[in-house]
Length: 613
Image (cartoon, rainbow, N blue to C red):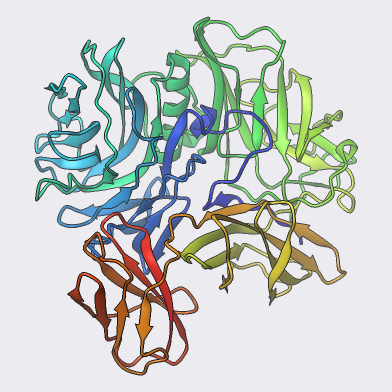
């Protein structure tokens, strides 16, 4: 078995410079926040404890430590089969700590949201406190959207849409952009619903970004479902707006009221809803010429002409497996192909077919083990009958660096055509993927929980979890036997109790019964926000109550969380005895080693310590 993660809970570093943001728009330099309920959500029985940032900026959303029960819930399959986070309108909230990347004087937000109850001050996003917000998005009881800003001249302005923009019946894609030269624009499903020409500079603040709550005013909690939150640090151009909107519309089953260009997500076309990305041009000043997005296919135009005004090329897939198992629809000479199939829209903004010219199409083969470029074949369903066996495979792939393999200057991608990747030698270039997910999350300054899920396994002997502090030198830290051969979902987990440094890197080595092995892509875990100064604990070991004594007064109202060796939170009633000490009485818990996290107002653990029971 060979493996490659589809979902990344911690953002990986891409080896190429392609646009890797949502829909293929922006890199981590521009896409400063990307929270996706389908990726990087840590939860306990559906109660969310952390929501990881996909942008590459580590702007992860944490539970506020001062409100330990403020846990949104994960709702699976709530939006076109994709999950969302439900905020209860009472206490649920998440905080993103400020690291300057979210201190914005211009921005472009996208949020996929549904109101579960229409109420005033249904707060989705607030940077800072009420009356001093850097930026804010919320709705009122009539469904209009409210976007206040505090400016550097100490004035405050508001913009509200008409009623009915946010509903309880469906998820909608809401955009909010601002720059001092243009002013404010708010869009719903692609159509502008509010605009102004405010020409002032927003006042930034260092307070967190509050999700689902306007913290400084009681009762302003969101009663809503949020599926995705995206932030750029400047307004997108009009072509980029169309691309991101089509990515979100396909994913969440929305029909855009303006700029609905990608149509292969329609039921009649096969529901190619997943990892949609695109390139296009509105005019010479509004273009996007290369995109990768959240998938493994990168398409771009280098020196090739043909991309005219108001022309776009989109691609999305059917969510099939990235592996050749049980695939029999093969052209002559091809030994295996991916189950996953992509489909192309090559159209103008009105939906008419166009020809954008030749493109480069690149596949990221990370985690696939040995790849010989000359074995790869681009398979295109040119007659659009849904069958690849009657097609002529396209050769000519070249290795362009790292794990990237490119078919250059191809004219095969035409509106409505399907495509996938094949191999003429599956022993030498096997093309498999069976790993659904590989995630890593810090429990304290030295403890990391690692989890992975396989969809199926073939001749799989064991896994080795490897760790590095520089992503160059690796050591095995844990070995786990595999089930061997399986066609069902299988989960694995382990704990690394000896993580060191501000950042730890992890990868998964899968070893076959014949000794061959394959490496997954790397995931990174930041530990710098975990305070390493531990309080004194006595007694330790303890079979009853124990006391934590701190070397300095605690700055925030503390909350104590106790975690067992498998990463599960166990009850730990506590009482603050003074500014420098807390008594904890966990009651009857099994013998073993536990990690105590003392959490402050801003979310991540501020102190950690191990206790023996």
